[in-house]
Length: 203
Image 1: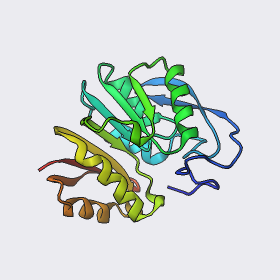
Image 2: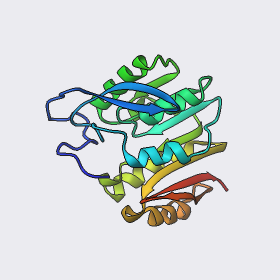
Image 3: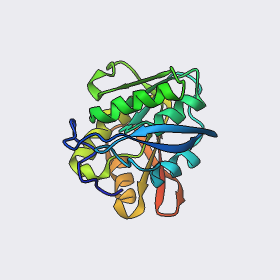
């Protein structure tokens, strides 16, 4: 990941919004979606996200699915396209990103999504599938706190898949997850170019 002039993990980005359109293919559908300054990867589908969407196993067809750090929505939209009977949650602290994600869900004609801030997800919800291109540049303490908030909420048969650049700490993140007292096991599912997909499941 590369840092943006205005942090994509800011709650209220300071830069002018300056919306633009991007053309992407998600789950075989060609879509024209809206992005803007102050969100992650506003000009294209991020390469790491593309690796995750190509390489992660098919999400659960039902239940609650989660995209951690949804940005303008490509991962959450793909989950919703692949699992139309599921309820998909996209969470982000960046309110501009959440507005864009809602707009993009409407543009794609998808109605099984909820985009919200983390605290707005009911505490009792457990997730059958979690996908994320996690915000590595928030720093390790904030990243670890973010994962600690969500990974333990996997359902008993749930699976989480994270895409992380090799040189940005994928191996150390795998070791850290395995060292936590969550009864979860993290393993390397695959490698593609500069990225690794990590899989987390109950031990």
